[in-house]
Length: 297
Image 1 (cartoon, rainbow, N blue to C red):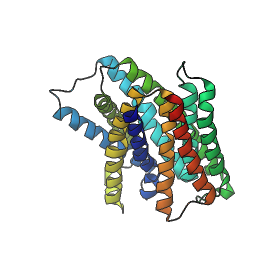
Image 2: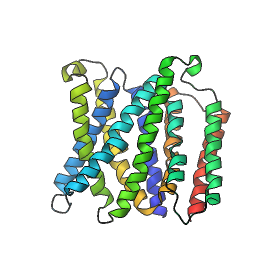
Image 3: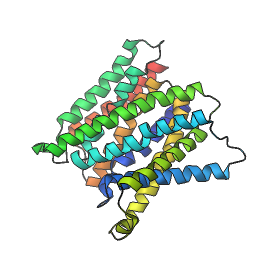
């Protein structure tokens, strides 16, 4: 259980990076960043599979089909919607919308033997943290509430639905297939995601010649490689380890760490300290994780 918890927290720390990457990418589109990140993920996964061909197993056609569906839910579809949300509504509010994922996963993925009242402390603390964050002033200039802001909230909500479904279905799939280890599944997902990202870029991305002539190309490539390797391939392995060892409801609560790290990275990028309410919200988020871990023991 401890190994699963640590893996889930580490995965959340890596996933938190993807919330600030769109703001760092400069004049590159949402499709370009999404495709670049997941093409890098696919290349890493393919290389690992080729290097370990003698010891790594290949998926059956049915398993490959599952990987394709999961890659659309948890990677390409989820992140494209998230990047669009951050483009329209800034970083912090979409982060908070995504921050409700632990609540939905916990409610939908509760083990049958666990009583609802055991989950109340963790849920209450998480909801309290979200309420504090929603009520505090944000640095994204959302006071005017233009139409694009509400469009961003809609994108964030759709992103939330995608990843909530992925978290529950992925956990259930891994438990039904104990013969598939975390690294193999991450690689299969990576190959499926990489192919999907190439198709996305081919149909909706910026032509390579135009991208090469823009400023900040080196930073863009670095962001794609960093989020593709760390926030996709490595984070997926860590999350698969957590999903195999923990219930879906506890995994869901560990996703709060993604919100915590995303806010930390956002504050660091903006060069400012969180307000008292935001700091208190982070404390409540952390206490919610600890309360949920205690409930699942």
